[in-house]
Every structure is written in structure tokens, then in C-alpha cells.
Image 1: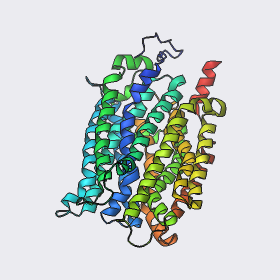
Image 2: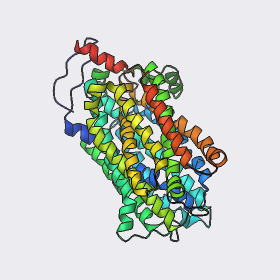
Image 3: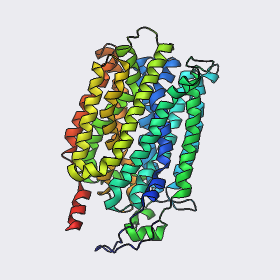
Image 4: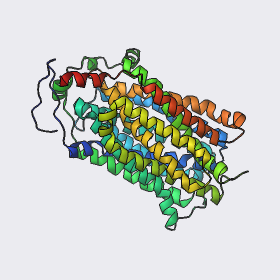
Length: 460
């Protein structure tokens, strides 16, 4: 940690020392690996499952595994990481365990077809998606709490912005990797495993990057030991109450700001889930004009590569925009920044309907990139200022409910809507996602930003 002497606050709790840019960078570096893995999953899971025999309207039901697992795992990990301290640290043990399990799942998912003689590849693949998501959540949840643990209020926007920048870098490379490998000699035709070589080897590389990035954070960053942690956060009386029942009590007592952000998150993540699940098939049918049983065709894989690369574009935009979030927030405020970004995302999603040339998809992704960058940073910046001391991990985990619930609802009804209301045309799910993003932009304007008020009062 920085060696500067903290200034005692009027409440008796010392002000945390400011960290250097390098310290913040290394503290969040593991997120680059996590998002590398997420990018591979988001850009390729639908086509992997389709190659194993899933119908397009079934995809949401397979994707629903991710939010269901996250809803259970993240509050538990947050609860126990608040109460953990050993030679590795408080949050770090969870980073490391999650990274190892995630990497194993990344290696096995594209090879699920090799055991199809025992169990249908589709079900093995769906099981691997479940394990992968559980592992991703174990690694990911404590990172949000770590930023709030270590940074003073005045640095949290910058801290989450740098975290978002690293997320963007990992996602860009992860999204572009399948296309890069395809252009450099790796086959795009499904082999004996049922998955093309460019996808399989991208997942192998992703597994290695995931572990490597987490190890950088484990070895290059520090955490406050319990005595020092109490100096900056106050004594954590909740540690003695370590029962899981405390999660439900904390849920019932969630801050006002969290409840209001819940609606914003609902609209945002309903939209994102639709985008991740349906964009490949929306582009294949609406832009490429594919019909019939096209899931194993080279043309479908080409559409998938275009979508994966386009996802890389929105992540690149998100990475760059993240660096400017503190400046934008200075002029528009936290809520104004998030609203502006969500409007850009809504316009970007709706514009996909009007695309006829696949290369134009990248332009739609610019607006989506602004929204994605803000979604990964601004809700947590707003939220962190309202969380009681000693509850950072559990409330960051509980906040995940507002991410997983809209995805679960979408997973249950989204496929049925595409099949029976949209007549099998997934492009309309993308349009609806755009309108939901606009609803999120309106909702955030009504959120009570307690942290911003505290900063203004302390500046007087």
C-alpha cells in the first residue's frame, strides 16, 4: 500500500491513503484475464452449443445457467471474503481458486463432443458452461470489493475506470482471437470434436491468459491486514456473525441507493443478455440471409467470426472510454455520465436492425461500447459510497442479484418470444434490447447518489 500517512476523519476512522496509478493497475490486472475468458464465452458459446445440436430458441435456456449460478455464488463469496484472512489475503484466495477452475472449464468446453458416446455433447457443453460461470464468479466477485477496500472515495471513479479499461483490453483480445486464428491457418470447419480448431485453440490460450493475469494481481498487489483494515473502515462487528443467515438479513437492509440501482441494472442486463445470446443468429439470418439448418455451415461460422470481432470493437471502445469516465463524470456527474452512455448503447443496438453490410456492425458497436464501459464502472462507483463499513464483499455480491435476475427472466421467456412472437427472427430481440437500454438511461436519473453527496460535503 502507499506509504503516505492517512488523515484522521472526524468520525474517528482514518482516511485511506491514495494509491499510485501503478498500484491501482496491478490491483485490477486480474480482471483482464477474467474478461478474456468472458469474451470467449460470450462470443462463442451460442455457436458451440448450436454445433452440438441446440436450436436457436433453446439458447436462452442454456445461457440461463450463468445468472442462476452467479445469483448463488456471488453473495456467498462476498459473504465469506469479508470474513477471510490468511497468508494469501482476504480476497486473493478466491481470485486464485476461481482462476484455476475457470481455466479447466475453458479447456474442456470446446472438447465436450469427444465424450458424446457416453453423454450427449450438448448436455456436457451446457454442464461446462455452468462450471465455467461458477468459477468465473468465484474469481470475479472479490475484485469489485478489493477496489472499494483499498481506495478512498475520491479515487473510486478512477479505480473502477482502470478496472474497466483492463476489462476492455482482455475482452478485445479474447473477442478477436478466433478470427485471428482463422486468418492464420486454423480450420473453421468442425472436426471430430464438433468445434472448429480456431475456436478450440482460442479457448486454450484463454485458459493460460486467465491464470497468468490473476497471478499478476496475487503477487503484485497488497491487501490491508485486519488491524489496518479496521483503522480505515471501522471495526467490523459482522465478522462474529458468520452464519449464512446474515446474507438474508443484509439483503433486507440493503441501502436505498442499491434498490434504485436495481431497476437500472435490470434494464441494462436484460438488454446485454439478449445481445450475447442472439446477435450471432440475428446477423446470420437478418444480414447474411441464412435459412434452414445452417448451424454447422462455414457461412454460419463466418457470421460468428464477424460477431466475435464486432464484440471486440465494443470492448475496445469500452477500454478507451473507461479512461475518460472520470473526466466525463466531472462535467456530467456520475448519474449523467451513466445515462448518456446507456442512451448510446440503446441507439447502437437498435441500429443493428438497419444493417445490410456485415462490416457495418462495427459502427453499431461504438454506442454499445460506451454503454458497456459505463455499466462495468458507474453503478459500482455510485453503489460503493452507500455501503456500510465491513459489508463491501457481501453487498457487492448481493448487488449481483440485479444482474442475474433480468438474465434469468430473459432466459426463461426470451426463446419463447423469439419463436412464437418474432416468428423465429432473433433480430427483434436485439431491437427490444435497445429499447430496454434506453429505459435504463431514464431510470438512473432518479437514483440517490449518497457517495457524491458525501464528497461534496467534505469539500466544503
